[in-house]
Image 1 (cartoon, chains in turn green, brown):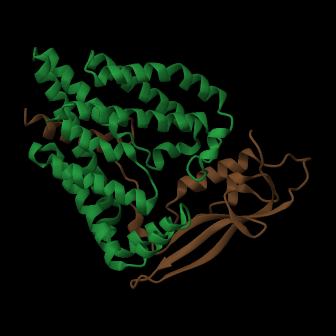
Image 2 (spheres, one colour):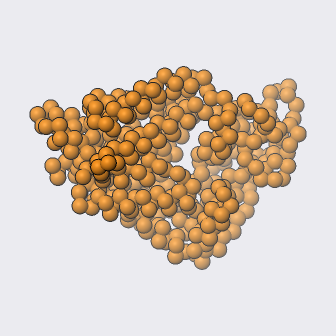
Image 3 (cartoon, helix red, strand yellow):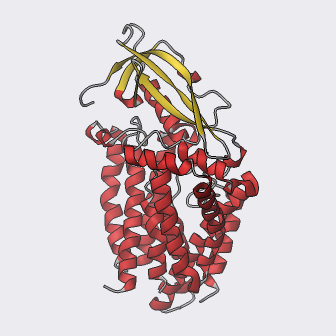
Length: 259
Length: 138
């Protein structure tokens, strides 16, 4: 399989992960999705959620396969965006007080896909070949993700200033999560939280790394940024307990797809 | 072709800053405000004095769930708190249902970390009442 082929598969996984995430929230709006365990899936799903997810998931799967195989990518990409926007709206309605938006539930694969669809659409309209239009689309997807990382850094700078990266701020964030998860992970989080050096390193890595993420818009910097992103997500998974598969794979997928 | 990605980045940044969190645009501000905290907080739930998770209980009574998350508690695990609130609201005992057989407490561990990495914590209950242990499939 070529690098672009692997990238397509990874991007498809990102899309499916995003869909599964939203579907879970729509299917189980009365369960403790984050603080509960897998036993949630043994309980009855919401009828409304079941109807919507049951009706749209086959279309989403077909569109994902079509997009990843390069079959009518504009149409399949637009269908994917429409479905993701739709389930996101439903998710927002079913979870009160706008917490889906307020508490940081992001959709990086959809953002990159939007960049792809817009740039590819413009390229096709201006008479570019399929190969050039595809390359333009993935370039735009990379730019969007670089922008997303920069925005994350900018938000920290605007709301907390340079002090965001201070060891104590990171220690508090990590220790708050040392009361959940498997016991060895809890112990590790407490140990890291008690080390000002490690916490400072984590803070500096996250803060400045997100600004540097803007370099993903430049082709030569994509692989270093993708590796940075994977390491950042591994750190977030271990220390904060969020398994963000979509964020973990998206930069690698885009680095491969943009050649 | 090299100009496409920088232009896309710029457009995405500008639009996101202008319109905020509007799918699939966002300002990505999760955890951005942690610099304003001097301590943290993690939610806990107890049943008969032992730590548990709130979704293992139902038939709640004896408290006003609106008091679950008082202002000023600097918790970054708000998903868990919102979920707990939803759960409790959806599983309150009916008015004629009688109290549950479990003493239930919900609250926050307030956590401080000093500059040398010493961690101290204190429990702050916000809800005290009764519940039942949840069993079986629903």
